[in-house]
Length: 333
Ligand SMILES: *Cc1c(COP(=O)(O)O)cnc(C)c1O
Image (cartoon, rainbow, N blue to C red; front, side):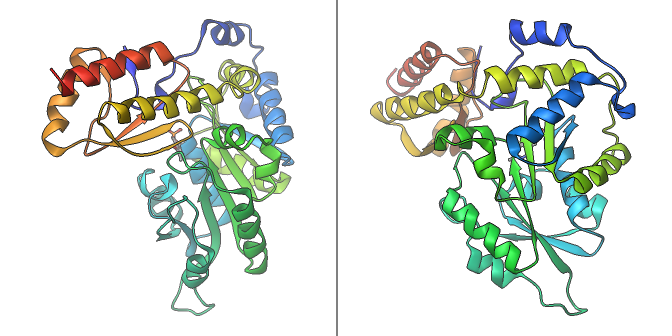
């Protein structure tokens, strides 16, 4: 099987499973799990924040992040295509009574600060209270420039807003920019990180922030059902991933760029490629047949008019060569 639907499909490697098997555990609700504590300490160290908290999913970590920044009747400004607006089942509104104010992202994935400024509500009883700017990095593979993050940070300081980064794929940005996590995290109050995407763990996300913020997050995590017990088994996978699977993300980026060039050479229209994500156009009449053709060849792809192809640690260059050959055979039978 070649699975290019997402980088969430990665399986734990033998070495990662060994690390999980060997994990020392305790009851993390009592804060007794040494492996969870070690993972949280490592995330805090890498992000330069005072504390971090381990979550089962990124969706829950983002929800808790919003619940900590915003009260009932508050508002957050967020991208129209952002995960924590569009793809988290409306959790902030449903469970937090927090109003989202979505705005369009620019072509580079940033939220233009003049548009953010225009969306901030005056202090007036007619309006929700604007409290937070939420950015996503990477956003559909696009890395937010550090200069933009610095401006956004300054801007939010002047406007008394908090700044959250949904960094589900933040390490793809770290590797692409050749920086350290702290060089990005310095421009936010809170940061979520997914361990279960390109980093290759089966489960897990982290929320980083200051001490008081993470204490509050601990309560919301419990309330939303995310207080896990012997979670050290899962945290061990996270520690392993942070040690072994960060630098190698460059391979995924190189593979996505290589695949884009190869598909383009056989006549596929490439829309864009950033980090580990490639978007190509598929003519409407080809969508269903291409999906079937790929499936029959043990290739899993979410084919649509705009098809997203995601590279990750379980897809080799050789498998991508097979994919290109199969696509070519489809186009020129
Ligand atoms: C995947 C993802 C999340 C969290 O997803 P979970 O599947 O709940 O872990 C959050 N934000 C972005 C941008 C993502 O891609």
